[in-house]
Length: 515
Image (cartoon, rainbow, N blue to C red; front, side):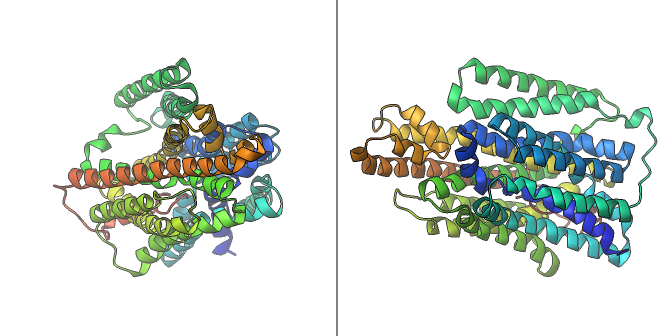
């Protein structure tokens, strides 16, 4: 157990925090039926977690350095478990959303310490073995998330997707206390104090921007409910940039963005996450609320994507030649864009097989993105900036997902409203209910003689909405690939085997997908 005890403790936490990103996707219709929810609230169930992870990640890394990595990991486990129980016992949507945010804070504390713990506990061949095991567990989490979510939701109840975290946390805590020694914190001098203004401003900016995007479809872009949080978010981001520029030891070193390759890496991961995974909640809603698949069935439909991404990220990195980071980033976004775009040709009578090919191809593209984008980021900065670069990479990864879910929700409602205009009494209200998984609710409220025609209309409207999302996502991926090519056009490519990037990767938690 000297070798495996610490590794199992770390991998258990890693598996939980990553699987909780995707495990909720197939449970969204069941959550909506149980608690009653709008599309905005369903978006926040997925977005609140990712946004909290992104907002807290850089600050959590600083706290781990100040107070010790094991202490931070244990604290993250406890917060994650308590929040999971709160999610499971939620009597309404506001409590569930708030609990998901707290759960994300615990996940950030765990996420920022997992690989740094491994790098301090192992060396030589054992270190390579430990990193390989961690990568396999992290990759499998994305593949198993939708299936586990479907199994638990269908066999028991959606609340069990959160309750299952409790016994796993207890086991992880026991192994952590037994096998992971305490790590000595760094000297708590002025240079290493937590950048509280930076953390708060970044969280306010990211949260305000996502809130504005989420509420725009319901309140309108010109409403105070949209413009006020958007204005606050912009002001917070401007203040954050100023604070970081003036700080001696900033939370985020903005000078890294002067390097085109680093900026290209951030664009690659943010665009990939925001487009490919930003539409997945709406794919799940279409599969269950329109096509009436079971939660398990919906999870199995998404499984080819997750398996393809995991195989490319892990297998290609170990046994097959990997393209250079800049070429791989462009190729990954290109394949991801073609794959997600291929999901945009649904008709009123289309079934789940229409999605499988596109899902698998986008999985191949994103697997390549995960394999090479981190190397592009870490290889473009000095070794002493590797830790901050990896934290920034992980932050952009989570922000891309959060922004994507929010933006595509607004686009979905707009597209469905246009499709329903002139076919129902209130196109905007109907689109809001339909996009939130309420097709059966709309049908049950209609007179018996009108239901067949309305059913076809709703199927067509949701297909139109999903097609709009998929084609837009595909176009954004292709535009991102072109932008990466332009940014790195004069860069010298050092290849995937660079010593500097490989060493830095040991401190990065971004080598595999969190979806």
